[in-house]
Length: 389
Image (cartoon, rainbow, N blue to C red; front, side, top):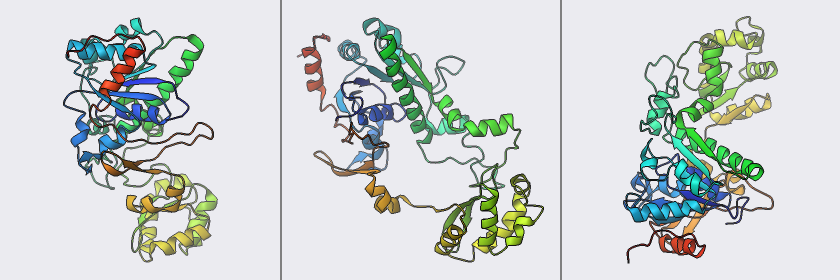
């Protein structure tokens, strides 16, 4: 599809989540992305839940790609992959440390053939150090990076995972930023480079403010549920019929919060006079606030807080968002009528360009573009190994 990266060629050898979403984002930006799958297929094809019998992870993480099947363990498959990389602008891999080099598709090997190549390498823990060759998955990194800690309810010693894939997708976004920066630099230098991204570094980047709070600010680790560690009030409260999220970032909003609850005198209470005071006395404040909010329905509180200029939000379910006018008008969810799987729902484009329009297209059927891609490759006079007839 047309887009800012129209004319760019991407070879995506990655599997599962953190790697494939990089290729999908580049594809949504208009690049021609060829996904190389092993004969057994990308494992996300069978991960529950499914749409039309295909794993939803596969369907949404591999949009805007052409799909080919190559056995990278065979000489013929490796040679074809090498030829594709020789003609590419970007190469993506997320194999366990050392594997891609054994396959003959490491950065040094590809750089010799294609000095302009931007080589994107995604690992779990980084390419040096004692864990460089360790395998990784999203749930592992949620625990290892500290992300899982403190996500449980107040007073609960158990760690809590947020939704699966959170760090995978964060890693993909950080990697896509790096790839685009390397492509810009190539316009100046004329040469590509290797871009290294680890899930651990991306997880720490996502927790940038928490790292500063805990290590620089000396904040005491404490499970707070939905509450902010440095701002009070800033959390979800249980109303009569649902959760409502409320915050007061300024003293004016704090005063409005007190008025909305029918207790303007709280604003002058020395325990709550400033935000540091409220942080120090959050339990006392919550003990006053929680029973009041629980007395009335969420619609009442939404209108009351809004009238008093207090930031407030209702926690939507995805099924609500699917039909929300704001989401639909901005095409934040894509509805695809596919020739292979029927009607599918996936995420929409995360950006909109005025003149280089982008679109979402379906993920490829296994190997559907193998012959076309290799035939086009040969027509560009890049000679892969002769395939067995």
